[in-house]
Length: 440
Ligand code: SAM
Image (cartoon, rainbow, N blue to C red):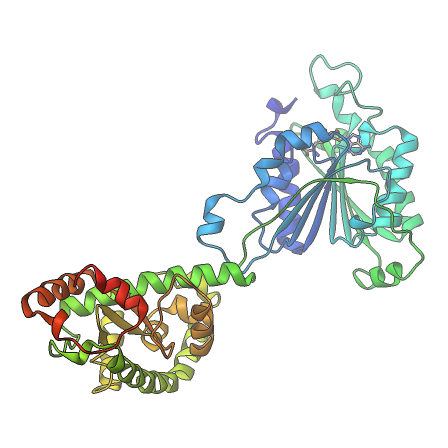
């Protein structure tokens, strides 16, 4: 039938639902008779939806199609703060299930004509009387349009139990409204040819129902003695990755920190901005601690800058994480860098430790808006990184230590040239001992 329409009729029906979702921003949506999950696949891109559920009596079909609802890799690589859970149930719309109560939107697209009239009554009671959603969209064929299909005799599909005229649909819908406290508007998709629209109506007729009293009535209804029935079988459920999940947030933050720490290290080395110190005990662990304190003082100064920057960060960006990827302009970076180095002059320049370059958290925090947005403040950043085994922190926890392979090479040469190994009396940690062992 679809070739008569452009875009195809099923696409127009789904677009109708999508437009409704855009206007009304429902958070919990269930599609009854979801079939091949094609409407669900489109709805999952609508960020206001937090719970998306599909129900169909045909479990085998759901199992074949359900994997198309899984998040693609981009969701894991660049998660946002949006939350989405998808669930698929095998069950009949003529039966109640408590998990489907209290939704904002229920859609029933080309479903009711597959039910017997007795089951349509059960459907009405389950959907409008038990599930009590804020809104319901019901679409069904309009039999008055059928004469426009060349060669069609009988119903449009062999499984249809009935096809209603506009008057029959209206009569059912108004009865439902009266019985369960809803109001309804009638519309449709699939325009008739010019001059015939009024006579035959839309190819798919649609009723959009709104519960009288809106959201408030739901809490009253929940208070009634409704039974907790679980008649559906859960076939599939998935939580989309979200930055509201602390594990995901930590993973993204760590990857961002490692990227920036490495980038800053390279830049500072290229610019000769690191003080390498003398080739003597400067590099021993005991003095490393001293360096840490200096870094801490520098960090404290930076924390003073933090409040100002947080304000700027928040004001500039509505959704900072999405808008402040790694693409900070080079000019801005260099400007900030200069500012930072000026601010912490005399304290920060010597943060190049033995074979590691120390990148203060304050620098990372102030340099990368994404790190700033994800962590919220410098203490949070430190807290997150302290729980991340893949990040090596300075003893005081205020700097990331990035291994410098060039330095390692230099150390190796130096140790060989100077006979340092024999001369050195300084104590060092087991970890360093292990690392040095091969060189000495
Ligand atoms: N809504 C789908 C869409 O827009 O792409 C198309 C629906 S398809 C025409 C009808 C679906 O209703 C079928 O997948 C069928 O398995 C399902 N169905 C039939 N009777 C049902 C029932 N009692 N409960 C739940 N689903 C039912």
